[in-house]
Length: 371
Image 1 (cartoon, rainbow, N blue to C red):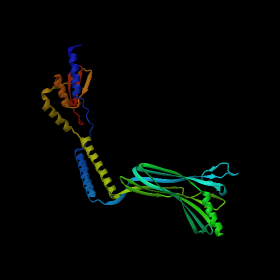
Image 2 (image 1 turned 30 degrees about the horizontal axis):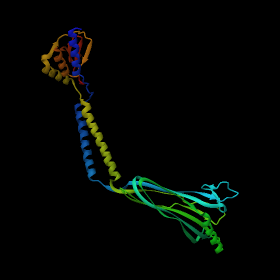
Image 3 (image 1 turned 135 degrees about the vertical axis):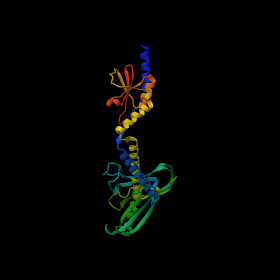
Image 4 (image 1 turned 90 degrees about the vertical axis):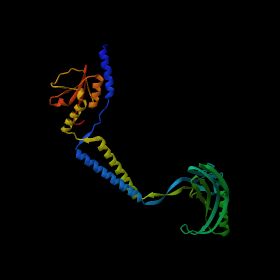
């Protein structure tokens, strides 16, 4: 390959590295309009900033509480009824929410499930117990009057504890239904009165817990109610007890009106900053013909010794045309290739173009109004 051609290609790649620069597209606006817009945005920005500072200093707070530790706990009673051998029921165990024939009932099997769940670890200590109460009343169903009651302890207080964010306690307790029912029957027989007797069995769960956010204390008491001294019965009551709680702390917060005002001012300041940056970065003063004349004089003053002026338009042949972004880029090409910068002197569109020829390549810089 020809040595001159190699030199040309090497120079081309060097020059390409020098001029890899993509100009940013700017929007042209009138000089005084641009100044007015910038001044208006600046005044609004400073005004909003001052109002924001005054609003923050002249704050109004309200006291509010918020949870720092939340938890929930629940206690649920489940049961089934154990039957005596009889000619009616085939199964020995009957499940919940049924109607039970009193003479065929042996005992009621109950179980309690207690669950605790908190946001974090809690050191929980508690007790559970079961008590029974038989209440005897007289009168019609709409106007019963309590006459007597008997208390029973079915399960003494039992301690439990756990240290975790979750905890579960479960225990089973069979209820001697026949004995409790007979107590109500005996009172009716002795008194010769038809008392309405209700057996209430209460499952008590008491806990106290310690967390790194404070202490908690809860009491749950689900219960079931069973009619006594009747030929049949259904088991009712509040079988599930649950509670959600929280350890709370008090804090001072801005009133909603003040907070909305501050947020609005911050948003407005942000928009004004963005508008100010856009006008400063993405716009420029609209260039007139006077600018072209001034720039031409400046170019000839700085680089006149590199420029060769052509009086007539020549027809040059080239395969590759490269447009450069600035006059300084074309000067670097000129110095790199050791070639003069050519320029037409006659009036017309081509008068704003400067170029450098190198074999089959031409490097062009065109002075434009939207430069």
